[in-house]
Image (cartoon, rainbow, N blue to C red; front, top):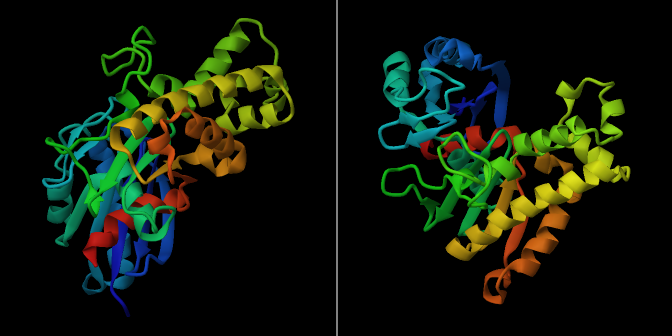
Length: 316
């Protein structure tokens, strides 16, 4: 049999894993909860169990190595998690590459999850025909990656592209990073939901309340967009403000990096044209002419498979 790689994507909510061949074909995909609040040392035991299951199923001699994408600021050379949010205690400072090698005795590649997504989209997805692009992921926060000169731009300390913590409002909301008005305080899906709920608490009405049967904890970005499509005034207002934030942050990034393409990822982008077309139209109208010439704006294509594909690419 052809040799396979083990791909692992450690997120704040779930861990995704699969066996991947040299063409990017995926088999034996699985998803388990991260359970990060219990501490990463316990989470790592779950990761070890996953790896051992794959080793037992196909044999160690048939595995070229392990690719591990991880949330947080990751030094891709040493494989150490330099910093991670407090939602996963014990992850900051964890020697991920070292511990994986010690456990499995296989070659290991470790990378930040959004960088890994960008590598996956370059290999098999929305960026396969471009040479220079930005990847912006919209989810719990906002993640970023810079792909240029044939690879990821990591920056001096290896943790470049913290797009979510670029300020778009100098007098804006306090962010847990210490800055004010950060991009992710307005452009993340978390922010979309938060700002919508704040309007409900003010007494504003919306069909969203009926859509979730009064259980506001079940409000999602997709539900808010569905309400907008039905003509709901509050959802329309909040989505417009959300788009404004995404456009504001992206305009600055394009003016700084002058990329060939911008690839938007994250679950909210699976809404398709309902999500991307208003942003694309307004974004292009606000860019200086030379920056919008031939600029490609696309949604990511690989979904849950992007990071696990991207991180194993260098193992073959």
